[in-house]
Length: 136
Length: 488
Image 1 (cartoon, each protein chain N blue to C red):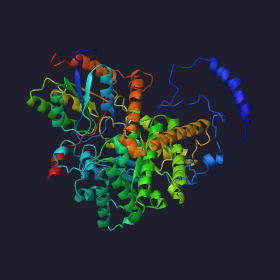
Image 2 (image 1 turned 90 degrees about the vertical axis):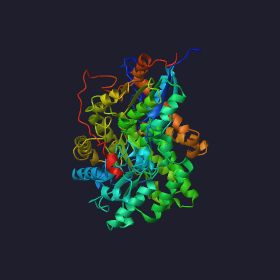
Image 3 (image 1 turned 90 degrees about the horizontal axis):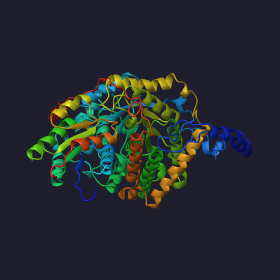
């Protein structure tokens, strides 16, 4: 990799849910695939996640939600990114998210939702193909 | 049983092994799901210290390998206790009554995230989460509604709540008072296991030291005033769900138990005054033989710990009473009907392992909270095991199986090795503070994921036998208006 500028990704846990197995595995897999990964830790609000994304100047935000609060948290993150003029940051996510809710989240601007059982290789491939450096 | 060990080993080596080594084997992983070696053929020679009396004993007698009660399921079947909670207290009260009508024998309450973390449902941090992962309880009135029409002296209730356990238990005691039920008639369990929160489930509101103080407060309070209540359910479930191996689940859970007992003794409580009220909660995963062995090893280890390490004299202090839940993390979103089969195998392992109560997961839980139809199938799975399969007729029916005894011994040894490492670190709280169990589990979880990604482990419908087209199933929707309704 050397001095090459790498795609930076923020992996976040939003809301009160503490189930972080998936978030940590995805963070580790993306790191091992050569991305620069920042993990927020637990119990963040959408506002805290957007703040971190901007300060860390990331290219994408990946959110893991298993609490059923996805229909609130994803749109709120996208709204706040827009408000801060950072809506070129790609938002994706995963967790326990019913199929019926996915199209609604995509309409609101979430670029991809990875369902349970997704191989880490599929997530890495998707990030490589869909996330560009915002400031190359 | 008597045999000449030398002769047995000689025959095994010279005849069977010669044949076995010559022949080709399938391209497959022959270790357990936790990566533990299993002997391809177990004989009495592999069961090194198999002493029918001191290692196995009898059900209801030390070291309880074969079960904690002399009659086991002939005396009383395990309690069928389905974890339930969603939406408003009215919604969950209806689900409770439905489950009781279907023949469930105990209640188990799931609270939503704001309740678990101590937020009222009109708090900004509760937005989007009210009633989603469990029932929303912000007040005594909510708690009264939750148990409306259910006599608290006629059911046993389990409540899965940790940081705010003392508040919810206080509300439960008041609901009982209002029904005219005295505290000494209440039977049930409150999870209140904060140590596993730091290790695995990761819901906390204050650091490990003060969190444990609150747990010890509950143990002390219940030992004096609510004598049939289990004030803590020392939980391996969440440790396993976070990706641990079976041995890590067992070792870290018992290490947490040791931590609580030490803190209680530190407070000058007498071990035999509170130990009979301690209870446990284990996961039951896909690897059938490993799981049966894990439950058997757990009982033997806890009996030794309580009698030898803490000098408990009351035999009731030596008992590892446990609830079990089938492994949520083993269920797949793909081809969800297959989950019914996974749950049945896991439930059978818990029963053959000798559990006191059991929750069977529903096939749709990787997608949403379960529908009434799905939860009925999972309850029926337990009823079929109990009343059709015949496994409840004989106590510890797999006891004496060479491979089960080999695995029981091995799991016990490896788990005691972990406990020794934790003792050397200065105990479980210090180990947690330096992230020892957390790191061991995260490494195991990542290793397992890589094995799946490389196809070295098979999950049917996910990385093998993939369907071209998934047939969608009906899922439960939680009304987004619960937030609004609870605000008023």
